[in-house]
Image (cartoon, rainbow over all chains, first blue to last red; front, side):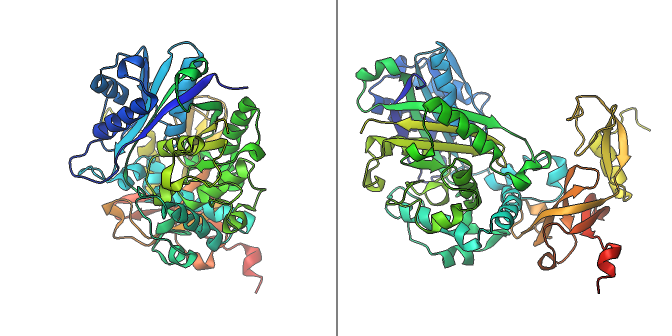
Length: 382
Length: 135
């Protein structure tokens, strides 16, 4: 069982903050890297899908990118699903290929969230709320904090266990020369960092950085034409609410949307959580990752915090995850969860390559307040 | 009066400024918050408003230490509450209580208050008769 599509190229842009660097620069750079990696020219691509930029306005970012690369695609557009955008782009490209709308797709998500001189991304994201939320001054972190308080109350998960997520990801980042933060941290460091919105501390919140990532997908029957292809075994998505006010299920079942997307992906791949050898889980906040671990079946309800504190996510853990350091220590942008998963499966992750190359990887993207979801399951021959 | 009628949000805010918390009511009698273009339960058009009792359960709360925008800088730290109203809907509020003394599941009462020039919903502890006699 499979999706009939393979990933044949992957690329990332240099994330160094620099005045004048645009989202367009990051998109073109990462896309050219992905095409070079695939051994393809822009003219070989007939589908271009992009994410959205918060920092830079484009009527349709995919149109900009296609024009800059000299591509005239038969299928193109922008995907906007918040943090789920990265995984959703891959899913959208795969469905277009499976439908016969195109053969070879370039998907890219890039944003100059740090280099932009005008964008206060934290304020912009908080400004997405309705009038019935804006009046109370929530950060995005505040709504996740409400979920975190409920989750900790229901599962007896401790602040130290939440902090262990940040510690584990920083440990991965300490080996990654491209991670934004590399100095190892302790649970005490996390709990001693400034409180942002209780119970979430600064070191439990995703970084705001530039990012650019791109992958190239094509039909699985072309696998012999490429070196080191990665198979897209399954995908699934869900959208279970918009704002927290319409989401009473967040109070007692915050993993609902994660679970629905994950179940769809597992069913398509014909695999279950015990078949997954590495993961890249959306980590906008520490609590997000714990909820995902439980909802995706990696941990029994209420046990993810203890499992992470015991080393679950580390290079020698049962589920090495967010191996580049994730959004908590490496960089913003859910597309990098995809590129890192591909690198681990191919054995090309460099300094962060796991000691045993994984044969399967699960990527989960999450947008809004656990609102929109996309799960990918990828595989490579041993 | 202007010929331009007030938006649903303006009507809601005007009532809140007078201390009344309004829920939108559809033709089939469903109550919802926040108001929307159609009833989320049955798709019927909105018909009017019902005043909420204000009584509810505090489901979760968080104290914000970093203002999202400059207009909130003067208020930090402030505590946001998420309340299930007795009528059913979830509402985001400010919590006017010592967060250390509050627990998930506490009974609260939500009222309208003016913060500077803006009407907001504020939750306070709701002392029930039972709690009052439990000394």
